[in-house]
Length: 112
Length: 113
Image (cartoon, rainbow over all chains, first blue to last red; front, side, top):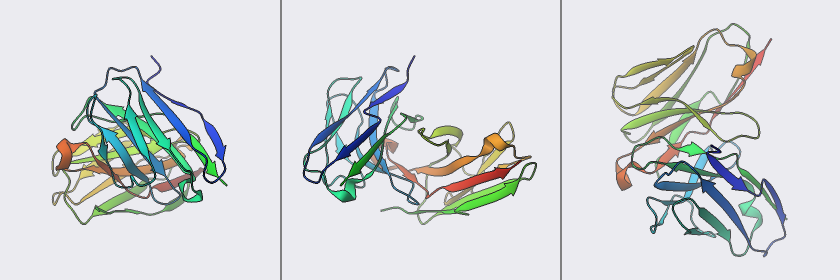
């Protein structure tokens, strides 16, 4: 039982390049989330998917798009990366509503 | 958006000492959560609090949900080196079926053996 997995673990991009961060969970959870973590700021929600087929904006959605591919997978896409998007990105999942969110190990992204 | 103020930002303590950290909010929450993050890992849930005034323990950890619903504290008793990490509080509100978590800025704990 792997829980929440994320790929890649590390990535370096040049400004303007695009990439997709992948997330998968094997806990049959309904809800999935993407956060970014910057020093001293805790985690901030980018987008979430309350259930398969739905996505909603979080606190900091600008510059990102998401796709809930199926119940297991939730991807985050940067169409044109900017240095301000240098961060650590975490995916999380939960059964939904008030249920506990379980986090993946993170993707460290550097945009030059 | 909602703001969570977590303090202190960092602590450097001697092994065996007790630790206390807290979070305050300008808004009310219906759930308070405490997570621990170790280097290179994602946050892991330590304690969840669901009711105002609730006091919950998990081993050497004790957390309380403030009666006003706007604050919470976490205590760690008799600290050990493996307690090192960043501790985050998080509040879960009433909007969007409670899906959104708001995180504090974290407390970095360092323990000297």
